[in-house]
Image (tube, rainbow, N blue to C red; front, top):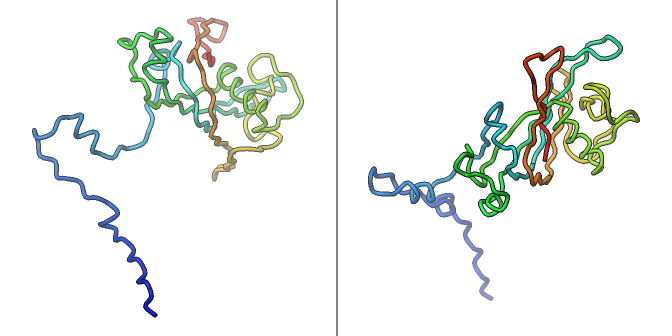
Length: 210
């Protein structure tokens, strides 16, 4: 009895269509970009560029913590705290227009991927509180408010009680970092609180998720 021949596996050349050589002046930029692969990455926003996200809706889709500054705590000891890198995607144009975002003044385009860093009593505390409330992490008992370094939401990853969802990484230097995929929508983007004190007489600012 005749048997059916096994299907031949496609070759790499058959699976991957070759690109047409680029000929200067023969394609518009839009057509050229549409036919190309794209490097994945995010624009780093800080200082004035980060302040441009005030009132701009975005969704945080990934968090990565990293070692931050060393601060003196109440016991007189120096302690290293962490900061968080928030990887975000900006909302689409329709949502921006609904929120009355001035697109002409925005240094980013709708749908752009942006990353920003924060280790303050603003965004960092909000992120840790969110992770705790959602059950991603467990924290020790303690105050949730107070000056910088005195809230359980200020604790670095190494002082968290447990990690239930996400990935813990320990570097060669022994510092613990944490990565998690989330979906946290911030309909008002960022908001900024400006202040001055004895340590920053010229003024400083704390950013919060809005």
